[in-house]
Amino acid sequence: MSPNTDRPKEDTKRATVVTRFAPSPTGLFHAGSYRTALFAYIFARQNGGRFILRIEDTDKERSKKEFEDNIIESLKWLGLEYDEFYRQSERTEIYRESIRKLIDSGHAYVSDESQSVDKLQGRTSSGQARSSVIRFRNPNKKVAFDDLIRGRIEFDTTELGDFVIAKSMEEPVFHLVNVVDDMDMGMTHIIRGEDHISNTPRQILIFEALGAKPPIYAHIPLLLSTDRSKLSKRHGAVSMTEYRERGYIPDALVNFMALLGWHPAPTPGEPEKEIMSLEEIIQTFSLDRVQKSGAIFDDAKLNWFNKQYISKLGDSEFASYASAFLPDWIAATSPQFGRLIQILREKISVLGDIKTALSPGGELAFVHSLPDFHAEMLLWKKDPSKEKARMHLEKVQSLLAAISDDAFTAESIKGAIWDYAEAEGKGDVLWPFRMALTGQERSPDPVMCAFILGREETLKRIDSSLKKLSAA
Ligand code: GLU
Image 1 (tube, helix red, strand yellow):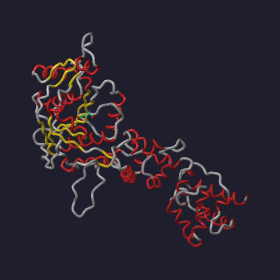
Image 2 (tube, rainbow, N blue to C red; image 1 turned 120 degrees about the vertical axis):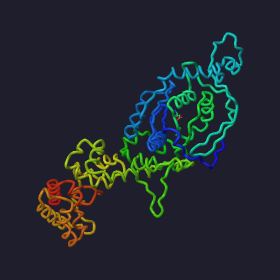
Image 3 (cartoon, rainbow, N blue to C red; image 1 turned 90 degrees about the horizontal axis):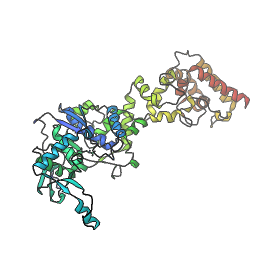
C-alpha cells in the first residue's frame, strides 16, 4: 500500500450521492461502527443524496437477529434515518446471478478443494468427499484508487491469489456480496473504516469483472483510546446501548462522535467551534477535512460534551430525560423533582449520576430522608456551643416561617437569613442549619437544601434538631 498525500477533490456532481452503512450483525453496536454510519449519513445528507442501511448477514454462524435489532434501535435513538433498508440474507438470488455471470465470462471458476485439503492432511484424494468453492480468477495486476482521505493507494494483487467469492451458488461470501450490492444499489461513495483498505483491491477487481466502475472510496481513521492503543472495552468503548443506559444525551454523542477525525475549518480570530447540532455539522462537514491519523476517543471529553448538552436542557426536557434515572421514591413530574433540577443540572455529567446522588451515601440522599445523627454534629467546630446552635436554629426557623409557602424560593430564603448570618458569623449560623436539614457531612449549601426540601419539611427538620439539642 502506498498512500499519497495528494488527495483527489470530492466529485459529487457526477450523480446523486448514495452512501451506505453496511454493518455485520455480529455484536452490539459500538462507537466505531456508529462513527462510520454517522460520516456516511452526514455526507449523503449534505449532498441531498440517499443513505442506505444494509445488514451484511451472510455469515450465518456469527450473525444474530438481536444484534441487527440493536443496530436499528441505536441508529433510531441517535437520529440517523435511512432511506432504504436491505438484508443480504434475503438477496441470495441476486448474488447467484452475479456468480453465474462471473463464471460464464471466465472471471470465476468452480475449484475442487479436495486435493488441497488432502495435501494439507497428507492423504490422497481417493474415497474423499468432494468439496468445492467458487474462486475469482485474479488477473494479477496493479490496482490503484484515489481515496478521498488517504490519497492515491496502489496494490499489486498478485499476492492475493485466486480468492474465494462463494462457498456454493447459494453461499456467497463478503467480497462478492459487498460489491454486488454496492453496484445494485447505485453506491457513489463508500465511506468506511480504514481497516477495510486491504479489502478494496479485491473488491475493485470484482467491480471491473462485472463491468462496473468502482465507487469513490473514503477510508476514515480508526478510533484509538487515550493511550493510542486500539479502542477496547477496557477504555470505555462500550456499546451504544450502554451509553444510553449510562445517561448520555443522543445529541451530545452525535456531536462528540462527529468530531472524531473531523474538525470544521477554523474561523480566524474565533475559538474552535465544538458544540454543534447535527444540522450544523451537515452544513459544515467536509471529507477534505477528515484526518488520516487515528482519532482519539476520550471519555472525559465525551462527558464534557454531555454536560454542555445537559446544561442547555429546559426544565421539562431535563425531567423527561431524567425520568429513567430516578430512584423509585421520586417522580420526574413531582414538584420536589422540579426543585432539584437546577442543582442536578449543575452537578451531573451523565444522567446516571442523578441516581447516584439521590441514593444512600449520595450528596442528595437527604432529600429522601434525614439520617439519624448525633446532636453534637449540630455544633459549629469553631464555637461548639449548644446554646448558640439552639439560638441560631430558632432564629433561622422564625425567619423562614415568615415566608409563605408560595414564596419559598432560594432567593427569598437567602434574603431572609443572610444579614443575620453575616452579623453572627456564617459558620455559626449556616453549619447547624445545613446539618439540621441534611444530617450529612457533604451536601449543597443550606439555602439550596431548604429550597429543595420545601417550607414545611425545612421547618420540621429544624424542629427535630432543636429537640435533639434539648435532649442532649
Ligand atoms: N460488513 C462490513 C463490516 O461490518 C462492512 C463492509 C463495508 O463497509 O464495505 O465491517
